[in-house]
Amino acid sequence: MKQKERLAIPRQHPRELDPATRVTNFDEVVFGYDEKTAILEANRCLQCKNAPCREKGCPIHNDIPRFIALLREGKFEEGYWVIRETSSLPAVCSRVCPHEFQCEGACIRGKKGEPVAIGMLERFLVDWMVQNGKNILTPCAMPKDKKVAVIGSGPAGMTVAYHLAHWGYRCTIFDSLPVFGGMLTVGIPAYRLPRNIINAEFDALRSCGVEIVRKHVGCDVSLEELRQEYDAVFLGVGAHVSRKLGIEGEDLEGVMHGVDYLRRVNLGEKLELGRNVVVVGGGNVAIDVARTALRTGSTDVFILYRRTKKEMPASQAEIHHLEEEGVRIEELAAPVRLIGENGRLQAVECIRMQLGEPDASGRRRPEPIEGSEFRIEADAIIPAISQQVDHTAVSGVDVATTRWGTFDVDPVTLQTSIPWLFAAGDAVLGPQTVAKAVYQAKQAAESIRRFLEGEDLRVGRELEEESSEA
Image (cartoon, rainbow, N blue to C red):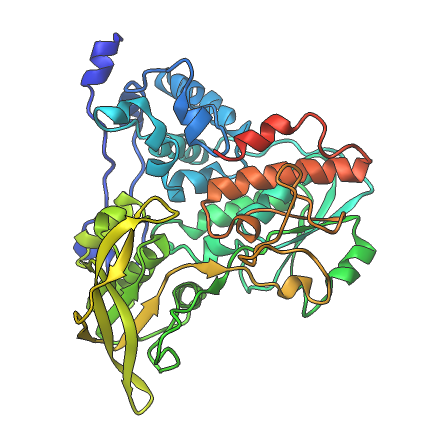
């Protein structure tokens, strides 16, 4: 096929559940491609020589052009194994990563039109392997005598355990939650990431000898006690602590915070927020909260965001789905006070904002407009404005942290201030994408391997330090 013909192919859009139907359940909203559609979309790829999707866009550096080339030749199994050369969680990343800001955001085709649907093509290969009963497990090495404790069963912990177990090291994952998967399970709704996808990853880990136990490190067992039994410890505790608004009335009944709300719903708790729900924030957590509130019975849900929709850091696809489902976005507005009666939230006092000069994020800074206050009646308000790291796991241990509360690590080796303790993912980066956690955790696993074998942790890795910024 000539380049002109490839350029003439429009982006292929997947089928989706009807909005009126999907707000009544937690079924997966977006369907995968069929073979014909996947091959057609793959033919849109220009096979760039210095592919920016791989070099600049993908934090894991998946060989995107190569797996797409194999896909369009009908070599689906070979394409899948290309992805597995670099990614430990392709079924997850293909569904929940913000591709428009990563691989697809760097796609050359996006400069004058729509980028190649890289995430959907990756998902097609993974789903095809499962649907056709193909083996998706990689061989495990014979067990060694070294043991590693992994604290946290989210994407960082899963990735470290995956690599170390495949190198023969005995790993035990510890998690305080009643379910495994960390933020994948308790922070992302099932309509975006079906639970069978996550469960399959843990089945694969168990098949390689990884033990997974429910214990709260820092409460049920101390870090020092783990050190007595294990040769190294990895911290993948994520960022599960909701950041507060810090305004009057935040202690009223009817006030709940983003990841706390999602955790309770995802663990099966029946929460009735009332009809009118206000969600504060513009990221994917805020979007997930609003869409979840609809699915649990609230009928008038809207998002309060201090910038405009154009500046929202959430995925455009998620914003599109949100508005399709009937959630309104109140732009350029921020809460300043929560008003209650008899200890119960009644209304949210807000102020109008205007955009000033750009701040450190590159976005224009929101500034309040004096005298523009207004009120919104609300049965519940859910701030979803960011998360912080919980330090319970390191109770009683002097480990260095940054001014943001994340763990301070060597940027190349991911080693903390304690030589036998390593960390990666949101515990180091703050709230970030699954792909970034996977890439960083892979580097941490290599450092742990070297530490266990008495090798130099830094030699030959300077290039990896640069690439981790992707």
